[in-house]
Amino acid sequence: MSAAFLLGIGVLGILSGVMIGCIGIGGVILVPALAYLMGVPIHAAIAAAMLAFLVSGAIGTLVFASHKSIRWDMAAWLWTGAMPAALAGALLASAAPGRVLELLIGLLTAASGAHSLLPTKEAHAGDDRTPANPTLAVIGAVTGFSSAITGTGGPLVLVPILMWLDMPVLTAIGLSQAIQLPIAALATAGNAYVGVLDLKLGLLIAVGLSIGTWAGARIAHAVPRAVLRRIVSVVLVGVGGSILAKLAQQAVS
Image 1 (tube, rainbow, N blue to C red):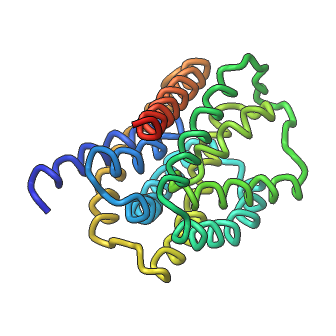
Image 2 (image 1 turned 90 degrees about the vertical axis):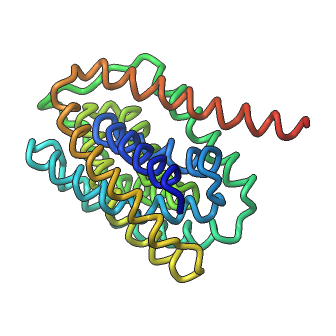
């Protein structure tokens, strides 16, 4: 690996980490940037990102838990659905064509951002907006499978769903940090089993994510919630639109 490549990986990891810690969905930029800017094959990029999310998830969870921003009763049911689904998603991703994976990432990102831009009434502290436990397990399964197959780590799928259910934005982001752990662990096991995991690349990304996630999680508790929601929406739409535009250009060329 060249010095320029290592520097690029470090900067990318820090930027993604800040976004993950602050708004929950920074991991979405990681796989496209690795593939398009750094020249990493899409399957290897997804596997390395999922390994790195183990670190960012642990740090983000610790910071949010220290601020009592994680609903552990909800997290347990989300994990129950997420773990087997994440393993299945990782195994399927290894056999899926790269172009299909890119399309899924672009559509998921843009749709999530567009939905988050719609006006909604956010729940206030003390409001009981907790979905039923079986519903949480289903949400966890959808999140785990979608995240593992696209390499987005969990927050990209979970944050919009919980915001749609009128959960407070900090609660949604806190749960999105916690759900990264089981998803990343099971997906990494699947990626290692099928032989697409680049351990060195994943650990390099994890170093940058560690720094960025710690800083971003602290920023999240100092920024107004309405601002956080708007940032989430704009970033999702921008990244998703860019991926789809690139695929469309490739299709007509």
